Image 1 (tube, rainbow, N blue to C red):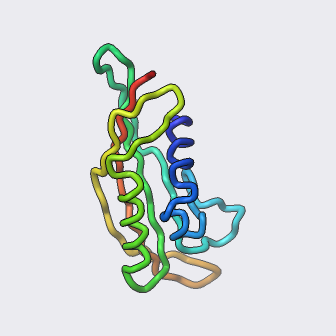
Image 2: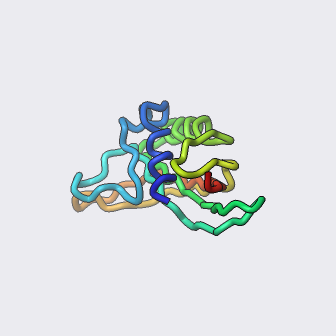
Length: 139
């Protein structure tokens, strides 16, 4: 799994999505040691993994969620982030150490508006959760 996460992080480095968020793309969660969140940002993490045995090769199908966060009052900022995420990962190629990518496809999006507390005040934040199914086999 660590190889997959490293591959995803590498793919986002220097991308349009990374530019959209000022490089603020984090695995698992927004780092607490950075203080209150700086918007916009992206968090990605593994939701689930299911072993696959296909063509006599061991593999795994993994659901990875990208959570896009924007404090902008409109949809333009988060919409641009979503478009750039799709351009980067829809049917993409990934170089995963010790594995071959079989496919990477977007399977779901859920859009939300969350109210969060930041320094004794509340703030409305757009949160779009985008799921990708990634199937890989051992090399």
